[in-house]
Amino acid sequence: PLFDDEGKLIAIVSASHDISKQKQADEDLVASLQEKEVMLREIHHRVKNNLQLISGLLDMTRMRSSDESTNSILTDIMLKIQTMAQIHTRLYESKQMGKINITDQCRDQVTALSNIFSHTGHEIHCTINSDEIFLPVDKALPCALVINEILSNAYKHAFKGRDNGMIEISVVQEDERIKIIIRDNGVGLPDNFDIGRSGSLGITLIRTIVQHQLKGSLLFASQHGTKISMEFPVIPGAT
Image (cartoon, rainbow, N blue to C red; front, side, top):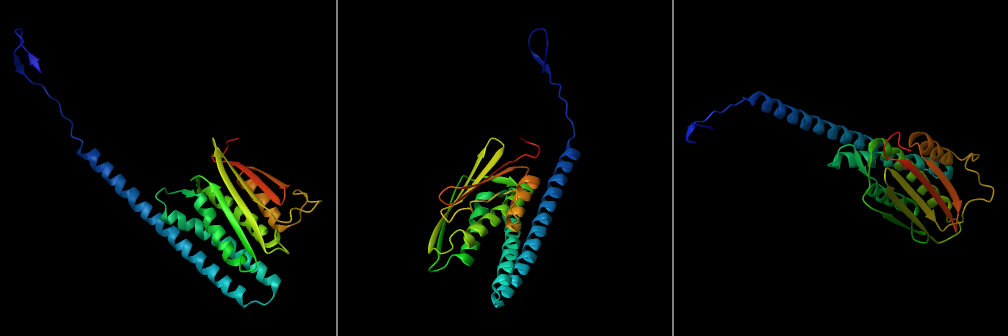
């Protein structure tokens, strides 16, 4: 507004800027991002379907095998593939692309393992204590594979000669680090157990993934059973 010497309004000066092109560019960008998100979800969906198909074929082969050693190998491979399929399922369903709810992932893995190893006359109960914790994909997948390996070992070996057992999973996040503790009330570790010298393929896989992929630390202990603790940074490069 412009006023004369007596304070009367004599004119209004205004300026405008055409932002049509900017608005169109913004709308095009949003549309492009939505299209890419749809394509990414479709990729996860197809990968998940392919992994589930392979898992199903392995399961059919496993059930037809009468050899205990072959059955065990096929079960291990099937569970690893199922774990990867579960990750892709969560990515497909998630509203947070690129992040996985590791608590829900643990529940899925416990269900899958219980269906195979826990049955009438051999009851194994598993509890999960965790808040809703989300991990980026590059952390979630190796983390899930480690959890699968630890739980598989517990279900198969910790309760030999017993009718029942308990497994407890605890997941906590402190600042930018994740700490996961898996304990059972089974037979415990051998007296001469040394994680650095163990020739077990499962232990080697756990150690390699935690130390090299997750850049974390790993600790085994016998405390009225077996207790396995692992800790790793959420953000790459964090210490």
